Image (cartoon, rainbow, N blue to C red; front, side):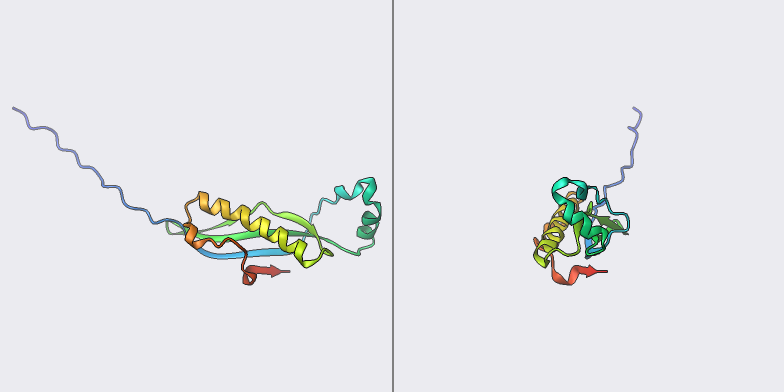
Length: 128
């Protein structure tokens, strides 16, 4: 009776979950702003203020460096625009929205929620 063929199987290796390395939220001048919303009739005075340079448009984005299987990847939120002369609370709201968007992506790629604070830590925010 012939011997059955022996097969060698590689045991699956246990992968470590992605690890959050760093988080930052960048608030900077928008180098390619879409100010078309200012063309609305009810915003004519705001449009003129923008043209006079009384405020500028800003871009807000959250970024995270994540270690995934030995490689550091930078994941970024979609980014949102805001106006430079808004009060701090309004800008903080945009910052929070960007963090929440990025937090959802980080959860989707498997970063443990224990590494993902619910709110933005002030030390993360960089204004350029």
